[in-house]
Length: 211
Image 1 (tube, rainbow, N blue to C red):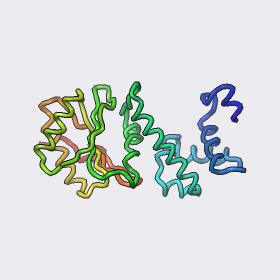
Image 2 (spheres, helix red, strand yellow; image 1 turned 90 degrees about the vertical axis):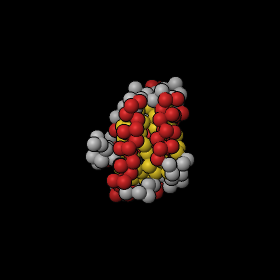
Image 3 (cartoon, rainbow, N blue to C red; image 1 turned 30 degrees about the horizontal axis):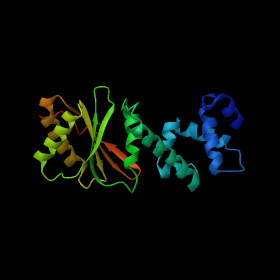
C-alpha cells in the first residue's frame, strides 16, 4: 500500500484503502481492511465517519486510540480549511457547515457566541467572537458594522454551550434578522453546539420570517 502511494500518489487509493492505512497506525499487527470497509458501509462516507460522535464510534466497537485518531482528522480538516487564505472555506452546503462547526464542539473551546461572516459565494470572510452581549442594540450595531467592513452579504451565528433555551435564542436571532434587513444582509442560520452535539435553529423551524 505504501509503495502504491509512492508510485502513484494518494489519489490512486480508494476511500477504504485510505481509511485502512490510517487504522493500521492505531491497530498494528492486524488486517484493518475489513474494519475500514465495515465503517464505510455503516456510516456511508468518510465525512460521516469523521463527524460521528464518540458514542457512535464506541457502538462500532472501536478502541479509544482509534476514536481519538478519527476525531483528530476532523479537527485537522477544519483547521486547514480555515487557514487556507488562497482557497477560503466555502459553506456550500449543510455538511460543510457541520465540518467547520466541529471546532466548537470540543470541551476546551471558549463558551459564548461567534458570528461567521460570508460573501455572496458563501466563502468565509471573518469568524468573530462576541465579547459583550449585554446590550442588544449595541450588539446589533457591532454585528452590522463588522458585516459592512468585510463586505459580508450573510452571516451564521454559533452559540457555544448556550445557557438559554433554543426558543429564546431564536427570538434574539429573529430580532437581528429584522435589524439587518435594510442592509440586505441575511442571517442564514444559528447553530447551538456543545461537546459532540449540534442543533440548527433553521432546520428546527425556529427561524421562520418574523411578523
